[in-house]
Length: 262
Image 1 (cartoon, helix red, strand yellow):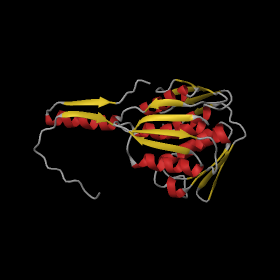
Image 2: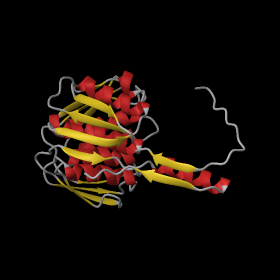
Image 3: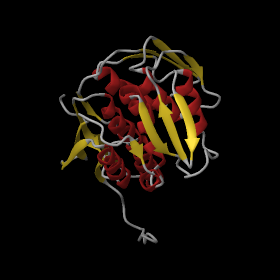
Image 4: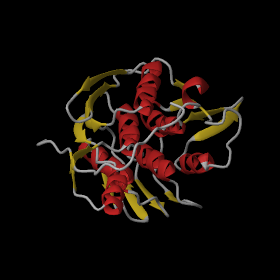
């Protein structure tokens, strides 16, 4: 779509169902790599990035299904095995969040080959923090022809302080540390609600994570995670957009989010 044509002068009113947060759904999909049991995600938004992430999991050999529901989508993921631990440039270039598979692949399978989002350089956005943090947990990571080659015979908990706050970096290390031996402490961690939501899912899967949503997150590593069901949190940006629209037009909107009984 090249442009949007908007005809103004009409009042806004009614009820709006807020979509699930894309930036919470993407790490949740990646977290399913941490177990060989089924992970069910509800309220997954109908956006292209989710399709790309599912394609990436299929490239790895993971089974997934998507069901259209009244409010968002239901995605079921079962990572029984790993056929090909490579996240290729053709998929990663479409979505930078693809790097979120790095931590789970290392934690569960011990190796991964993930394209850098830019294809050939770490770039301005701090992928280097993912690398430094995983290396602190015992991973060996090299960069070869635009790919991160990572391996680990067994991750071990440690303390790591982010030089700058990184949401995906926090999420990647939190997932990796959930299956590392011992205790990991992440300092200067991202405090976004999407990070908290990922911690809720991981704890449902059997992880032991404390402090998500604060600057310091403590993860007690466990040997194995299991399946879980989870509702993705509502999108705060979409919510704020409708709140502002109602405020500047002086109308009444009812904003509703999806919550199941699970």
